[in-house]
Amino acid sequence: MDKPSAPERCAEFIGGTLDDLRRFPVEVRKLVGDALREAQRGGRHRNVKSLTGNLAGVLEIIAEGNNRTFRAVYTVKIGEVVYVLHAFVKKSKSGVSTPRSETDLILQRLKVAEKHYKEHYGDG
Image (cartoon, rainbow, N blue to C red):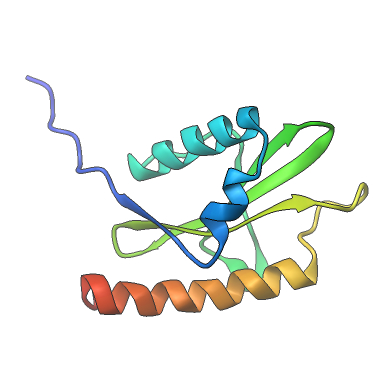
């Protein structure tokens, strides 16, 4: 007999993240959607990497399209919810680090996600 699968996590989009994702090219949106669905099922897509430093527990989906690099950032460390924190186009052609302005926004939205979880799902 097959082991019952864990319930799928719900996804919550913080700030203008969903609107930002909707502006991505179709093929990028599909990849991001696949990666988020995998996260909701408890897995990790091959295009996902962990962010480091003060963003521990935050993951980044990296997708290429239209000769640009797109990023979608999420966390699964708050309860049983996938919080999608940010979506943006990487502007720099060199370096792999996430720009400071983007990390500041991610940190701000992480705090919003934590507050949202407490208000809507309980303390966990």
